[in-house]
Amino acid sequence: MSLHVVIGAGPVGSATALLLAARGDQVRLVTRSGSGPEHPRIERVTADATDASSLVTHCMAATAVYQCAQPPYHRWPQEFPQLHRSVLTAAERSGAVLVTVGNLYGYGEFDGPVTESRPLRPNSVKGRVRADMWAEQLAGHRSGRLRTAEVRGSDYLGAHVTSAATVLLLPAILAGKRVLFPADLDAPHSWTATADVARLLVAVTEDESAWGTPWHVPSAPPVSVRGLADLAATVAEAPPVRIARMPAVFLWMAGVFSPDAREMREMQYQFNRPFVLDASAATARFDLAPTPLEESLRETIAALRGAVSLPAVRQ
Image (cartoon, rainbow, N blue to C red; front, side, top):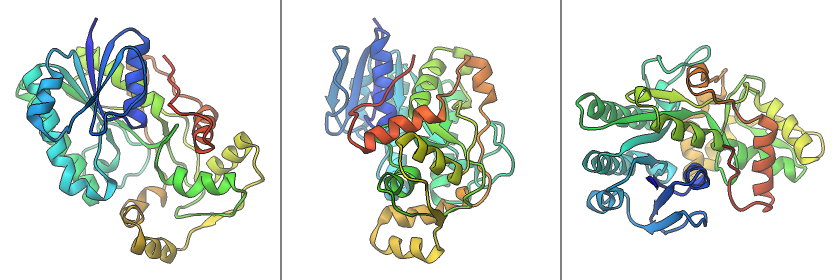
């Protein structure tokens, strides 16, 4: 029985741990709090993943390591590099394959569907953090010290996700209130199901020829914020949506009181123009079909209503 170490018990980490356990693998789930889904094959370990020596101990004898953890959004520049280097050290010393969860920040602004071949040209602080971490990770792979790859998705949907959609859009829809969203409401946008991130993570670890490169998560066809809102209202059996673009001053004022709102201002460019992920390479390579948007929304809405406690996982 293979041992797989999952770092982080957020929506992606939990979905990955459950997927591995369901197929019969032994899973060690590492978090600061010892939290995570309950399953006979999931061992929940309390540990600080930024402590490299401790993490090395927990990763020894592992077949694969899945880095699904991240610091608080507003603390990325201060805390993410240390966490990342600790994970790289654990993978190098244990010899386990390392697959990390990334995103599209490193590409900066782009026109047309973005593929993995696009150079990383970040235009934000968080984008630079992502780009620098991948450069360090890739250098380790090319030098032979690591066997690694990265999986990148767009804005998440799924149980217990924290995103612009789950903070600004869906709660207002469920409450029958007017939605104010800081975006071009009609620009096409890609939305990624957390369950699909988990499935690609596992697929990449098992294909040696897939290492040393990033992979985009197969995601449902792009839908604008307005289109997502209308579909969410239908799925939730909520009243028709009243939606308008949030004035920039509202987001600025929210940032006075909320660190996450301040960080959202930096990444708002992703919603001001088409933001489309091209995952055709992973779709062809791993024969993975994305979760339908309606299904992702149903799971997300159920969690917001308190009807589910864990992410759904499709094999």
